[in-house]
Length: 219
Image 1 (tube, rainbow, N blue to C red):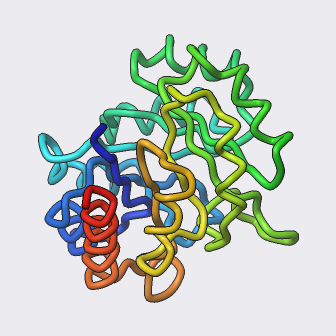
Image 2 (image 1 turned 180 degrees about the vertical axis):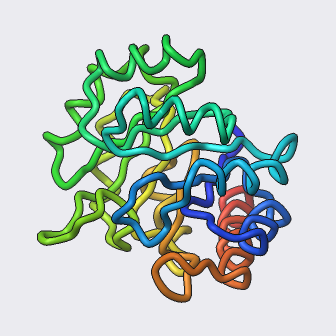
C-alpha cells in the first residue's frame, strides 16, 4: 500500500513548493481564525493552483457552517474537505452530499475509548485522521505538537484507512510507522521553525526519514 503524506497548515508558495517537491500526496490549508496557520479562501485558492495535478488539496475546517464551506469550495476548489471539529456522522454525510467531495473526518485520541467513536463514521467519511487530543488550555484542536499512544491503533480493523497525526517529526516518524502502520501521515508543527512557519529543510528531512524507515522495513 502506498503511504500518503499530507503536509498541513501551508501558507506560503515556498513552503508549498517544498512539500510538492518532496513528494507530498496531500497539501492542507487551514481555515480556523485562531490558528497561526489560518488562510483565507482567496489565499488558499491562489496557493492550491500550484498543487493541481501534483497533490490533493485539502481544506481543513473546524465546525464550519455551510456559508463558510460554500466560500471555501467556491474560491479554493479543494479536492477534499477535512472536518477537524465535533462534526457528527450526520454532519459529515450532509457536507459530503452538499459538495460532492470526499470528506476526511479527524478524531482526537487520548485513550482507547476515543477510538470507539470511529465506527460511527465508517462508510460515511472517505477516510479518518487520528490526532492527539489538545493539551489543556490549547485553543487549537490540532497542530499542537503532541502525540498520543500509537499502540492504541492496533485495536482498529485491519482494513482501517486513516492518516496518523499529532507530534510527528523526522525523529519519531519511523517509530510511528512501525507501531501504528497507518496508510498515511499528517504533519504540521513537526516541520516548522515556529508555529505557522514551515521550514523547507525540515520538510525534506521528514520525507527522508520516511524513506529510510521504509527501506529498513523492506530489508
